Length: 137
Image 1 (cartoon, one colour):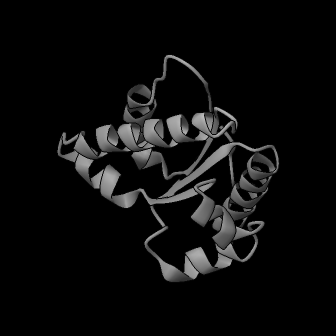
Image 2 (cartoon, one colour):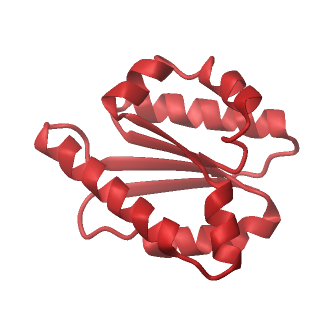
């Protein structure tokens, strides 16, 4: 877990981690409660290497995590299960195309979202492949 003093620090950590993951051929997932905010995505996307190309090729997935947190608060884990299925499908496709089976999930969070993080980590367990979960608090 990375500790950030402010949102700019957290954004910088996300950008650095995602760019490194993309550089090494990993499936990179950026799940943030701020991804529904167009100004936040604009700031982040302009600093991620080949942002649009990586989105289109399926190397980079952007998730608005606010919905997941709201669902977890009312004990609805369906979005997490759907995300698990989606990531597994992306991984199978990548592997069949000879790409890396490594996944990097960058999840900036507020302390009150810790429950959602725990649920996400539990929901995302694969029998094969590697996953790196980087969260900030």
